[in-house]
Image 1 (cartoon, rainbow, N blue to C red):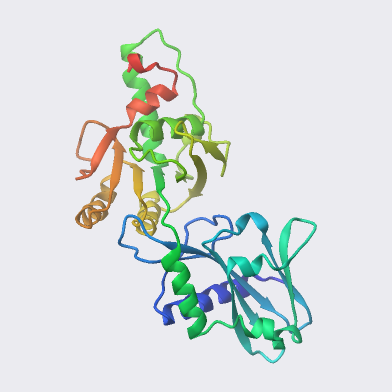
Image 2: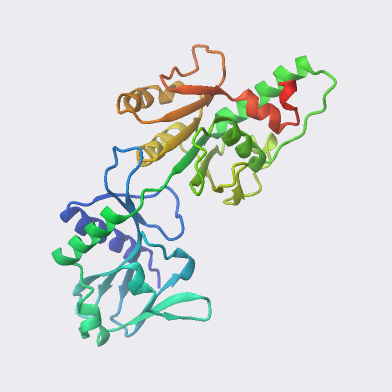
Length: 328
């Protein structure tokens, strides 16, 4: 049975219920450890409290169904909503807090496991989890207690990065004509960008690197991008996650949508240089959002103008192709 329509129905229903109780809800751009929705306290703050929401939809008209949640997903700010349709087309919405999910059985795949059928939903256990005004207040209390986390989010325009690689090699070939440059891998490039321009060096923060590639361009010929959706440790010792998206759509529009989702983050590094970003960046500057722009250090009519602090892309790329710091 195709559960995708039911899953989408569940997400829409859960979003609607959360909005009814005046929660601010957004969607993550990528599926990050089971997160279907994010409840945020204030999307206009650089640093905000938030809850991760996993949405589950189940139809129990044919008997018993089940829900599984990987143990690794469960954190203090993670909650599960279960949307259920019974044999008579009645629907129910249940909320499970992290400590309640931990009460479920554990299966052989090291997942929390919950079975559900028509008989079980009549039990007090399920009735106590029905989402209502009282549980919405408990959820609000959880949101208020959630610890804000330090984030750095790096958004990379793959088309610009491809041009920047060509420009970097052109510049340093003139300076060091005898040098043989290496083809770097994406992780090396990301580490050098973060090391050069991530000015928030706090410990135990989360770094997310979003790389947007175009089907019509060939960044992969300049940079080895084979490590798709990988994790790595930054030079500062923080865990970083990599998300690669390849699309036929306009990359600039994709990145702007992601920027809208990330304006509550502690620090954003935007690797881009196209004028398509100018209007949005100007509006974000007025909101006092903190962004570091990594672009070319010279300007022509096709390059964007930004009021934010900026860094030269050729510096980290020079390190990535094998140059030493004193050679740049």
